[in-house]
Every structure is written in structure tokens, then in C-alpha cells.
Length: 174
Ligand SMILES: [Zn+2]
Image 1 (cartoon, rainbow, N blue to C red):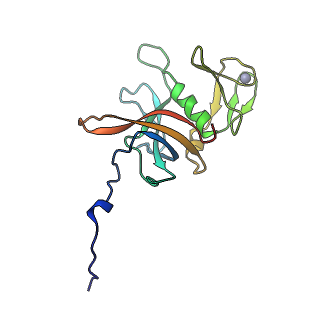
Image 2 (cartoon, rainbow, N blue to C red):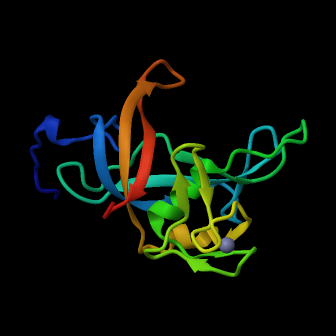
Image 3 (cartoon, protein in one colour):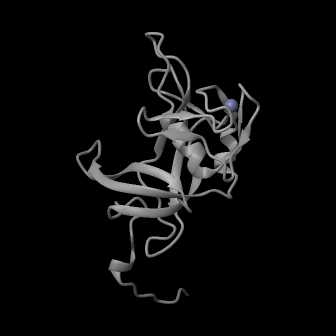
């Protein structure tokens, strides 16, 4: 025989409910559909990391931010131009993963971030101060040790419902 239970209906919070606007410390989960951990864009012209933020502290701890955050990490558009990788660099800096400059060999991460130039809004190697090519491993985003500070707004979703939008991601101690 099952014990009888009673429940306050207000205690049942939807998993994907919209969170109030504000800043949240979150952990990162890989929400990619493909086994490789990297999904293709709908157009098939780019590679992207799909980040699911899980709130790590406070009143909303363990809630998922919906929808996931799509981060282009490479690829070339049909017209031959490159994708904008600013969001990927924002995530590299916020999560403090290790990166290596292919130009000068400088190794950054974990306290030495890419330099963000506020006037042209571009990222530079903090070793050689040049706009070079860097390498990093997207698996590091999801190694379970990363915590970032995520700023959320509320915006209209695809079904005209309200969802969260990610407006900024930065390191927890910045
Ligand atoms: Zn460099």
C-alpha cells in the first residue's frame, strides 16, 4: 500500500520556467544533439557548441536556463565570409579554459584572458597583442569545473511565450 501524500501545488516548479531578469552563477552542460558534442547550424555552414546553463546558487539553484545558448565556434558562410566568433571568445574568457596563441605560442586561460578591446569590440592575444588565431578545446567548457556569471533578460520565444535570453557571460570573479 502506498503512503498518502499531500503537496502544495505552488511547490512544483516547471523545469524550463522563465527566470527573473538578473545575474546568475551557473554551471555548463553540453546540450548538443550530435555525439561529437558539436552541432551544425541549421544552414549547415557552421559548427556550434550548445550550452545549457544550470543555476548553481541561490533561490533558483538547479534550474535550467531555457533555451540553451548557441555559440558558433567555426565554419564559413555560404557567401564565403567567416562566422562571428565573439560569443565563443566570450565563453573562453568567462569559463577560463586554456587557450594557445598560434602566433606567439602564449598559453592563456585560468586567470590570463584574451584582451577585449572596447573600442573595436574585438579580442586580442594577451601575449603578442595581435589579432591571431587561437586554439582551445570545446570539451573543456563541459569538464564539470566551470562556473560562470550569466546575465539574463526575458524575451519572446518562438511560441510567443516568454523565455530567457543570455545577454552577457563573464567569469565569476570579474
Ligand atoms: Zn599571441
